Image (cartoon, rainbow, N blue to C red):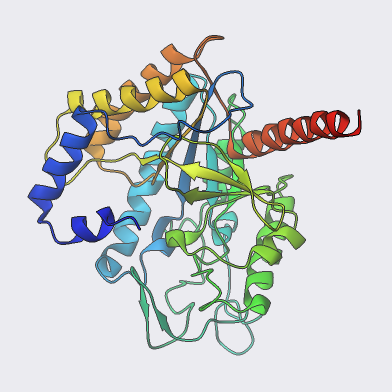
Amino acid sequence: MNIYPKFRSFLSDKNKGALTRFLIETGLKPRVNHQADSPFKRGIVVFSADFEMAWAFRFSKTKHKEAIKKGLEERENIPVLLDLFKRFNIPVTWATVGHLFLSECKKGSNGLPHSEMPRPEFFENRNWSFNSGDWYQHDPCSDYKTDPAWYASDLIDLILASDVNHEIGCHTFSHLDFSYNNCPKLLADAELDICIKLAAGKGITLRSMVFPGGTHGNFESLKEKGIECYRKPMKYHIGLPYIDPFGLVAIPSSLGLDKDPYGWSKEFHLKMIRNYLDKAAKYKLVCHFWFHPSMDLWYLENVMPEVLKLVANYRDPSKIYVKTMGQVAEEFKKLTAETQRREDRKANA
């Protein structure tokens, strides 16, 4: 049993920061799956972004009053991020809330936003509390010029127009708790169906999933709808994907990129990133960085450019390559199938 999370929960923020720093300084973090027999020829670095704007925060226990502010910050930051990733030719899987594909929406005949969509029952989880009203009660039912924190068709077009081969992934239509407890299959199917339809309208096939708030579930629906992979926290920060019982590729989540609450310097942040890159390169494993585009401005301006510069400098035939989630899933399935064929030939020889 891993007692570390329980032990950490008793610590003050100051002591949490000190403990994390100690683990990084001593090389105990990131944790590496040294037993993994990697099929990859190099280490792999993945970047994924939770592209969600105001939708992520409207039922937040701590930030519900900041939903529009966070959405507007994300809108302002995305062009800056796109320029940075273009400068270093690094692709990102933009896990996109489906409503952001819209440039406008209107109330239905019954006066409710998206009246055709099923609603979740009231629920509470670690991060959100939905205990009254309607699930879509915050939807302004207007357009991206009037309420730019709730729509982002223009930003998706900006991503698609980039010279970098970014991937657009799925983050549900309404930033939904996707767990089995709070999302019946009918609701999961409806959320995925509308995401797939809206993405197809822009020539996009959704292959990758990031579960809002880490609320994993409804894997059967993902498989049925053509999703191939998802991001998942695992025992090891640097490790291998695996194929789950539903035939989906689970890709390890390594580190969230943003300003820390402990007052760490830029130099320490970059030292931490180098530790992750060194271990991914050495053991030919996956390092998966993820971020919210609404990240702190200090991190965006001072740290993020240096992070991408580091990754670009590591990207060579002897160290790492950079892939999207969909590309990692495709390569891992291919290599796994090749390994299985070799084993079958040996068994039948």
